[in-house]
Image (cartoon, rainbow, N blue to C red; front, side):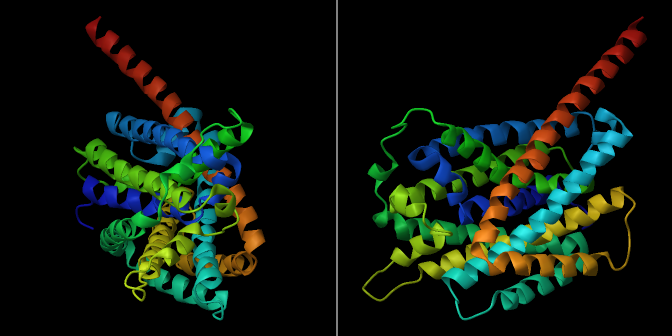
Length: 366
C-alpha cells in the first residue's frame, strides 16, 4: 500500500484483538466464575495502558521497528532472543486461528464435515491473501471488520431479550479468590493478541494521529469484549456456561422470532469465520516480517509455514480437550510475549532514550 496510515493500522488492531476472547471466554470464566466480568474490566484497563504506552514510546522517539527497540533496550543478543520468542508467539497464533476455526465449526455447526476440510478451505485462501502482500491484507481486514461490527450489533439486539442481569451477581461471593486473579491474567492474555500488529508500525507513513486512531480502535475492541463477556454470562448461569466450549455459538441458537426465524447462527458464523481469517492473515504477515529481521528469507517461506501450520492445527483441532489445553497455555504465551515483554522493553527503551536526550540537551546548553 502506497500510503499505509494510522487509520489502516487501527483496523489491524481490531482484526488481531477481537476474536479470541469472543470465541472461547470459558478459558477464564472457569477460574473467575461470576466475578469474571470484573476481571475483564480490570484487564481492559491494563490492556489500554500498556498498549498505548508502547505506541506512545515508539512514536515519541521515532522508533517504530520492534526489533530495533528490543535491541536498543537490552542489547543485540538479548533483544534478538526476545524477538525470537515474539516470532514463536506469532506462529502459535497461526495454529490457534486455524485450529479454533476448524474445531468450532466442526463441533457446533457441521459435525459431519471433518476438521481437515475446514482447515484446507481456511488456510489455502489465506496463502493467496498473504502472497498479495500488505495491500490485500489491509483491504480484506477493513471490509471484514465493518461486516463483523455490523453482525455484532445485530446479534446484540437479537439476543437482548434472552439476557438476565441478575446472573452477573452476587459478586465476590467467596471473597477475592486466586481464580479471580488468574482470570485477570488469562483475559489480559487474550486481549494481548492485539500486540500481533507491532511489526506493522514500521509501515506507517503518516503517524500524526497514530495515538488517536489506535485509542479509538482499542476502545471499540474493549467495549465489544466487555459486552460479549457479560452477554454470555447473562444468557447462561455460570455453572452451565463453564461446560461450553464456544458459548457464543450456543447463545445465538436461543434467537427465535415468529417461531421460525432463526438467523443468529449466521451472524456468529460471520464473526467467527471472518474474525479468525483476519487474525490468521494479520499474524502471518507479521510473522514473515519478524523473520526478515532475523535474516530468514526464502521464496518457500509462506508455503513451508502453511504446511507446518496445517499439520499441527489438524492434530489440535481433532481433539477438543487437547485444543483447550493448548489454548490455556496460549493465553499465557500471548500475555508474556505480546504484553509483558513489550511493556518491559518499552519502559527500558523510554528510560534510556530520555536519559540520552537530557544529556544532549545539557551538553548543548553548556
